[in-house]
Length: 233
Image (cartoon, rainbow, N blue to C red):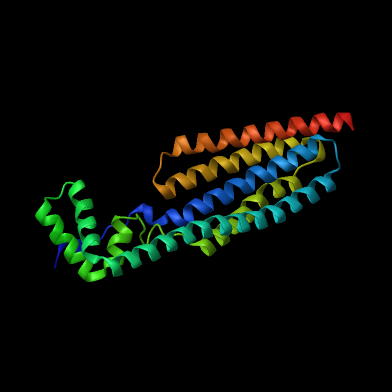
């Protein structure tokens, strides 16, 4: 038996479709909800009003994430399908040219001309469209757009992450609401950055620092605006 069958490899790039949507949803859930809560609380409103604003932010944000992901990834999917349809048409009209085109791609990657033509011929004999989709268009099963998966993943992770600042509101006394929600949310963001980096095989320290910095900046800005408008009103 081949060593490739006894020692299969699992690459992290296979997670890219759902991981990107999950990290985006969770990050936005914490940052937007915590920033909203901190901004409203800084305006000196009541504890109940802050909680209502947070819940409204969770619901609206989850729906917005789902719709936004679905629309944007559907646009990507439409583009991929249009390219595949055009490639299918070109293969039916001039397959010899398409074979030469594929061979030229392999030559540019360092394959010898005769071998490149043999590879192109063999791959196109097996599945011509799949060969051109992968090597000419850069479309594969792993990277193909999945709108529903992206929408559901973003909405779910947004909701779960947004619940963290809301929990902090429930557990915080009114006088300490802003610092507790801010500190708790930054802790959640740091944990999210570490989990996302671990799942994607990235540098944990860099990812954690990046997501924590932007979260802190967002909360500081909304707190300042809330304080300003609360004083004016």
